[in-house]
Every structure is written in C-alpha cells, then in structure tokens.
Image 1 (cartoon, helix red, strand yellow):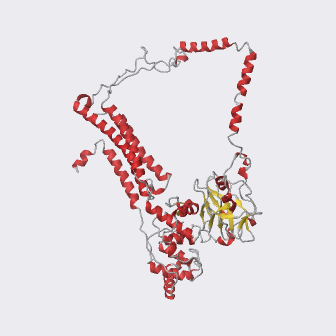
Image 2: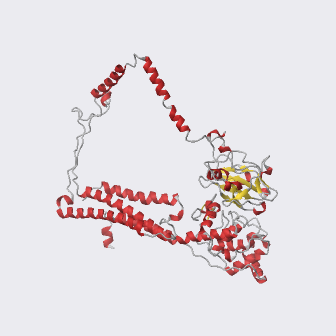
Length: 342
Length: 262
C-alpha cells in the first residue's frame, strides 16, 4: 500500500483503514431492520393509497382543464377585472396541473412502490493498470505520428493552429462599431431649447417658478427617427429653480444658470439610474437605486452613497424669445464611468 | 377545545398554521385602506370668512408661523402660499404639526371644512398664491393613459409607479396616493408641500393634472391585474413573501419527501 495512485493515504499513522483485519475498532452496524408500511400489510390501506394517488392525478387533469377554461373561456373586455380572473385561472390551473403530477408520483413512490433498503458498494476510482494503459496510448500516438522527428510538420501545424482563430476575431468585430466618442456627446448644443418630457414643448424661463422641477429633453429629440431612446438616455436633464443665494457656483460656472434656474444631468454617475427624486426644501437629489444623494447647493456634489462624481451641469441661458436654451453640450461625459473616460 | 388539542400533533397541523398565518397577513393588507373625503369649494371669500380665519390662525398657527403669518424660526412665512396650500396642509391634517420632525405626517384633521376654508381665505389675503382647484379639473374625466405617462415622467420616481409611495432621504418619504381626494392631489401639485417640488400650470397644464388625477383614481379603483399587490412595493415585499412563505412551503415539501410513511 502507500501508492498514491490508488487514493490511499500514505503513512502508517494516518487513519484506520477500513477492511484491514489488524484495525478492528468500528463494527459495521449494518442497516436497521426493515419496517413494513401499512400499505404493505393491509390490502385496504394499499387500495386507499392507490385511490389517493389517482385523485392527485385527477387534480392535475382538472388543473389543465381550468387553464384552458381561463384561456379560451374568459372574454377579455376593456376592464381589468376580466384580466384578473383570467390570470388567476391560468396561474391556478398550471399550478395544480404540475403539483398534482408531482405530489401524485411522490405519494405513489412513498406509499406503494417497494421501499427495501439497498446498499451499493463504492467501486475503486482508478486502477494502476488503467493509468499505465492510458500513458501507453499517448506515448504510442506521439511515437507513431513521428512529430519529434519531423519538425517541418510540427512547425506548420503550430502556425496553422495559431492563425485559425483569427476569422473569429474578424466576425465578432462586425457585431458593432466601437462606441467611439458617442459616450462623450449628447444632443445638447448651443441654442438647443429645453423642452418638456414627453411632449417636447419648449420651456420659458418665466414658467419655472421657485421650487419647481421640470423633466427636460432637448427640443430636437422628438424629431429623431432612429436612436431616439439612446439619445434620450444620455440627454435627459432635471431643471430646478432655487433662490439664487442658495446656489454656490464655483469660479467659471457663475453664468451656467439663469436667475436661480439650473439644469443637471438626470443620469446617476454611479450606474446610470435616473436621479429624479428632488427635495425642494433640502435641495437634495436622491438616486432611487443605491441612495446616492447629490446636493444641488454645492453643484450636485455627492453627499451620500456610492456615486463618486457630481452630476454634470448643463450650462443654460435664455434666447431672445425668453425660452431656456443650452449654452453648449455638457462639459464632461454624462453617466457612469467607462474605461476610456479618463 | 379538547378536539383541537388532540389534533395539534396531526401531520397537517403545521401546514394549517402556515395557511392561517398567510391569510391573516393578507387580510391586514386589505384592511389598510382610507376613506375619500368629499369637499366643496368656493374661490371667493367673504369678509367674515377672512375675519374668522384670522382668529383661527392667531389661535392655532401663529405660534410657529408668527403673527401676521410672517414666519419664525419654527415655521415659514405664509405670504403667497395661497389658499390651495392651506386646504392641503390643514385639510389632510398635516397642519397643525404634531411635533417638529423631518416631515409633517398625515393625521386626523383638526378643523372642519368650513374652518379650513376660513383659514384659507385669510392666508389668501396675505399674497397671491394658488387658489383652490376648479371643480372641472377634479371630475376624473380626463385621459388616464396620458395621465399615466405624465405620472411616470414627473411623479413615479418618488411616489412609485403604482403610487404606493416611497422613501426619501433622512426620514422623509413620499406618501402613497390611494385614498387622497382629487382636490388634495391637485393642491399638492400646484403648491409643492414640504419637499415635493412645485408643478405649476406652465409645467403640467390643468388638463394634464386632470389626466393625472384620472389615472390615479383609475388604478386605485380597478385593482391590480395580477392578484395580490403585496403593497405594490416591488421586490421588497415580493421578495419577503417569497423568502418566508414560499420557502416555507418548499421546506415543508422536502420534509414530506424524506419522511417515512406509516
């Protein structure tokens, strides 16, 4: 013994080896005596169990029928009550159809099928002969291919194997263009009017009273035919008006708002949920996903939660007609971090 | 009683207990509903109403809001908040506040509709502000689908997509909207009570507000399409239900699977 390839541990003091005569510590207690069930001895009980199993299967059949009654029998009108009835019937029908079969089979196995105990001996995991035979097969293959003696074949094979995956790279590249600078730009540009979400009507500065919160999209968004959702996902803005003395703009950003009206990106810098829970007294913006909290009076600095960067501010002003317009695009990429963001 | 105590070791007793517990929990959800308040309003006030309102104000509100409602450290000035703000705050019992805290909570209202109107009349004389909503926007006859879209854009982030309410920062919360009267919903939108932003008529037009009210009343009255709503709180209550009730059933099944038959 002590050969590592048959799985037995080495060292005489390791464990007591089962089956060895000299270590006779544990007596195999064997199986407990077999106990007969009621259905094994009493034919009446067996008959009763048989009927119970059959009833469970019948319940399954009824469940399937209930499903089809719900599916075809319920006329959906324009109230939600009929939909609720249909959903209830479909759900209960499928539940009982499955549950009936499952419980029926289990009850059948437990009460009626033979339940005598069986012990299976564990077979040896691997024999030394099998291992040797396998090694010999590999050696034979290497020897018979002659790969060691024919370097030309070996080297061309290595070259072929190395080049073969390249078509896959070309194909996967076709899955889509790289994002390029799409993550750095939004629809906002100089003179783009701020418009209400969802109808796209422009907003006048006089409309935004103190304490207001407007959900804003670029006016040109609704003219898009392609990629509207993606464009909206980057460009949505929350527009709020505070007392101008509550705002503390840093140097160079004093004229990014208008009379206390400020616009901030609605996309959380953590993982991109819409930060739209605005508390008009505390001037906090709360992200509903992970409770990142931004303080509007400190240029949306993060005051709580997992976000690390403040929300980007959209510089705004008013045009000649009194409508709020963007001064430019955002000055930094909106939303969560990405690899090339820098 | 004896029969009950004899049956308590029955194999199905645990299951029966589980079902009983689940039904009790479900029943509690159903009980938690509030009653709509009916109210009428007028937008013109008599001099007598203003006078009565001032008396009520001095007796009940001036401690915090100051004499002449000019505001103190404990309460803001009420100049320009309008009659709609008084109707909402006093009419839902939020004012007078029980105690200072993160948020004034709804409680049984302390004044009759008549007294509330008198106070609203007095506050309306202090400065221009939103008046009580007009009856035509409260009839629930708007477009529920348009209202639903407006609600999801402007309100659902705080009040939950099913208007079941939600948490805000530091103990504040957006309340559930079921059972709130039409005029209080309207007043809340135009006045922005506490930390709720203002949604003035330039932001959401009166017809849009009518649509939102129609949507809220529609989802409140028609019930949920999928059966038990579990508070409409989404993964929190649904997850809790799955982890307790459904996992309990699964454990019950595994015990049954591995037990010996008699």
